[in-house]
Image (tube, rainbow, N blue to C red):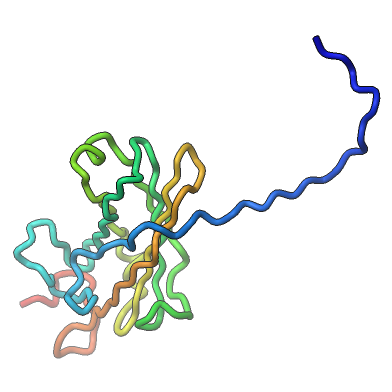
Length: 173
């Protein structure tokens, strides 16, 4: 049984501060990058059947973490930079890519995979001595739970021995 409260307080405006999720997850991995962290016109790992040329997209693996749960959503943010160390100025606006954690990912401890595409929008602005950053956030039921460290990849689309930049296979002989 409820009884009415005879005293009321005046209406108030409330402000809530939402804390950033803790940065505890490993940085994204760029499987097509060289030992020195570069993606170039040629495939760095041609023996890998899943390897991509830079104009086909950039593969990113999100390392499995025991904190992942089925139906968690991972949102990766990618951005291109005009320097080798992900410092301004930016060459692209931040782009978001999402993937959902499945029961099979949990069971098999799979890395989550994302391909940065399309080339023209997210990769072509980077030519020589440029870089890209990638970070991801783990969301559970729409709430950010954890954040990753920032992954860095360097991009060099200069065609060896020429003055142009690769954007398809036409330069390969």
